[in-house]
Image (cartoon, rainbow, N blue to C red; front, side):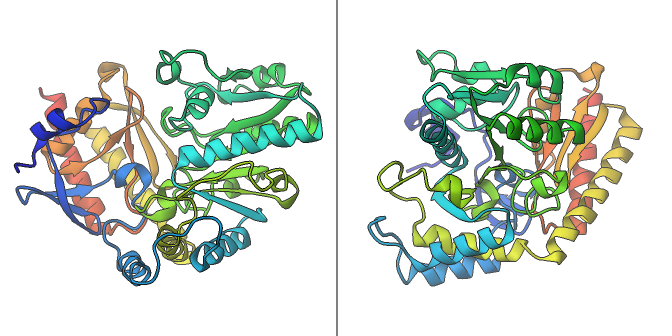
Length: 401
């Protein structure tokens, strides 16, 4: 069998259009393709590979647990799930954890819990969910409806009802929407797919205060911002705003699929036995790997290192931009970085991604106007410098095309 890009078109549903590059091996922040060509990874599997590729702690956890027990039904619990849950609640505002397999599933659980909590506590009229334009919360029908990008939710028939949106960072518009019939507000503490947009302190605190005033649960989607990405274990810590429910995935497993929803005991009690579940959620293999990832990231050395590496990224990106004048702004927090193309290159962010790939660098975009970088949290300075040298060549090729 010839395994190449053409095989994708033959056997895979065409909802993706992947690159012709097929990586086969990774170590740290370097990846090699079928032809042995080396790439530096500034994409991290979209903020997933928080410790790079094949980190020894994750490989060891996978091997050890892989020789013990992989899966159990939820008729029984397991040790890795209990250890991971204990560590997560000890490190956050939360008191209870629920495990799923992805960010979308964690968000689905959060939204169902919020609706159930409101129904039980206040009655059927309290069902409205508010979210934000350009937000992204996953691809299930509920989460994609709550996400603020209609292009992802249109075309599939009637959508879940009582979901409304307003602009991020527009506190007045939000205040006009929220009422005593609002059951939950879902927001990213830094918009990822929407363009790497940070909330103002006034906005974040204002949303929290209005949720409290109207007895609405504040759900923070930390699928992309969580597990050290911003330099805090979770981004809410940097905002000095505490949500009622938090969702986490992506980096939580360091590349192994797992998601989690965290909340308080008082809220969690509304998901009684039988109200929600997941066949694979909380399986011992995923939880063992996630425990190793969580332990490795949740240290002062790694979290402070994120801030230092982010400063170097910004310094080098600014230097590239000084030479080529392609970006209007470099924004983000920690190692969730967005370089916004200026008017000359409006709508052309993907051209920089394609050019970077040709130079042996893996990057991302966040919409049509933002080049996104989400590298390993433990990427070396040498890899940052070499990757940015490759990115400079990519920028030059786009500018001089």
